[in-house]
Image (cartoon, rainbow, N blue to C red):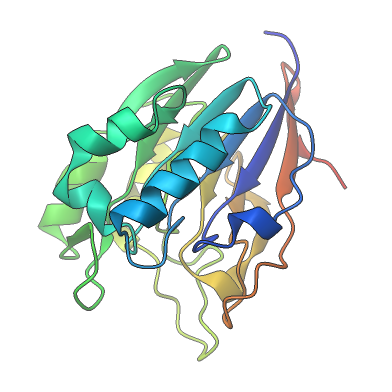
Length: 218
């Protein structure tokens, strides 16, 4: 495959207009692009996202993006021109990609599932050998620590990752855990753009992808 540059963002919460996006081949958004998932919010974000110059675009919903759960057919229309993935695979720029919005139950937000059997069944549906995995939730124990010191990622996703074996895993959800980690043969990226105070100041994470592997661009 030819070299690719991935630009990764997440949790923009309506502040996408303040994000300075580097150039790249694939723009990835790991969910929570709106505040409350209203039609006007999702429509405005989708227009902005699709209009970005990156040739390929991948987006999943997050727990704030209620419209995506209520009316997925409409949301697919709004994101025409991008790969909107609601627990499904796609081939993007030569990569096998799987994207999913599901997360451990959190208050009354969108795309909630109970920890245990319900989430384990979802992650069992992800095929093995995915190149790029995009989820809204982090896995348990990886870039998922809250400001209160609690690890709140999905344990069922963490248990499934050795089988799925993605080379790169992009997620968000826990704003204060923004950052990257290398381990177990994959690059993990919490790409949350907003801070815990919902200020869109955490920069996009850029990845160079080649046959030799994926590496961060500093």
